[in-house]
Figure 1: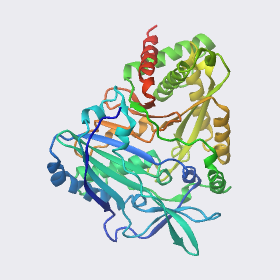
Figure 2: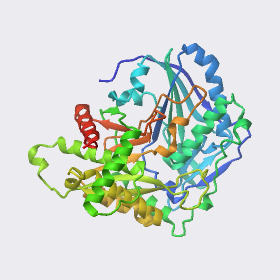
Figure 3: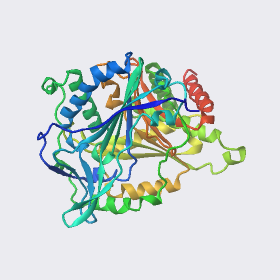
Figure 4: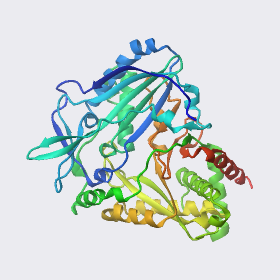
Length: 467
């Protein structure tokens, strides 16, 4: 059950770039942006310890937080703008005009801050959802001779837990930015806030974003293919919130090394060859994939468990294309390729399931490195087909490379960071561990009665590494 708490609204305002600092700008969506038009809104939470009363936050921290946000939006203006979607065959675009702004809400909560930042105990999903804002609903606006849909792109909510901490909850539309671009924004905001609003002091630390859409080549007009297919998105099963709980299991540094050793030994025993590169990402996601498939198997009746031994399980993750396409690291927008690893359920739950999972994930990474954007025109259609045929699928959000725990507004490292929008259809999240000396952590949504089962499978899996 979610903890009962009282919420008090303290302020509702809007924040925009400094007046006259950004000219009216239109940014056409690339096909890599268009891919995310029907995606659920992204929701990220940062928790910080702040052992002061609400009045102290309102008078000493809030003004600088808003001023630094305004200065940051001068460089990251799309987040204050709107997505405009004219009728086909016209291309959607992000539009910013002087005076555009994003909603900024401040509330006070009596929720237990310590409970919310403790990842090894279940927290009700609603407890986290209360800490992130909803985007304003879309509206209709004129676009020359056409009427087009207009969607705001970001909203921010700050929650004060008196004498304990604060959280910064951000909701944004995926078409505006991927995880790397969003991280560029949050770290820039944090740096300016840390420097007490002096944006010039961080210019040598964080480079301004690059908005050059010509860097993404699309001679085949893939964006039009994606738009047409995404208008039929309702035929797919969408991620929807459920009455679940959230846990944050951690695979620490020593277990990461044990995973690499164990998978290497089993691989050599099976093939008499050395395995391909086993990165921390490969071995930890392989471990989590196996744990979640075993969890699903444990929920079945004995009769169900014997059916369709060759059922296909899918693990989908995203690869950043910037380096492979020789784009600047500060390119702002979306530059992600979906990678789809598949394996038979019977093999994943078998004795060498982690080897099978690591092979499948590693194979997708190698294919991506050899030929990024391969088959891009069929990403959506082939993805739909895979989902129709598979029995169990998991989608992974985030990456340890995004370094979310380096987002310091002047109150130190986040005590916790969460991806809130994880839904019911197998979506999980990954990040570097909040402990600087550890490995990685996962955000995992579970049905309330799955918590003990998952913990048992997870702990047994780590124990097996010692055998």
